[in-house]
Image 1 (cartoon, rainbow, N blue to C red):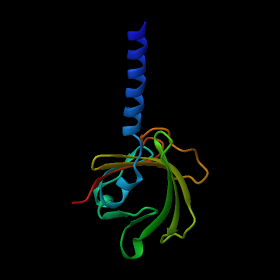
Image 2: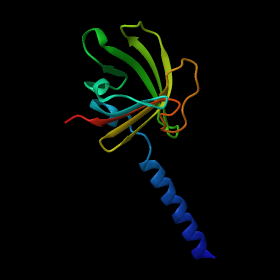
Image 3: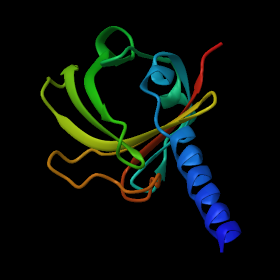
Image 4: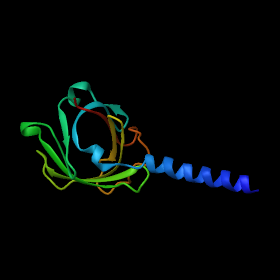
Length: 141
């Protein structure tokens, strides 16, 4: 009985430690990234459209150059699983103010961002570009 209780407690603690290790670390998002792939509502994004760098600070995402420069302020709920991200466009050739809800994950030098581009739309629950926008980025060297 005591062995079973000890084993069960050890397994529960191990699961908590494993879950904590998978917890989203916002500091790992900061830096310069390059697009690896993209999909918008089931359509693959062409490689030419995925050129350029994405710069992420603790509260801002910036991409593009010149007339096609975009900036978004964002917040992350790291307690959600997967981590939830809320974005608001602050600079764009199309105007500011658009909002999107998404999910975000960092695994090593890879970042996944999946969001619903429709303002007021539901937040995606998984990293799937069939009905959302999904971008995979890699840390720039």
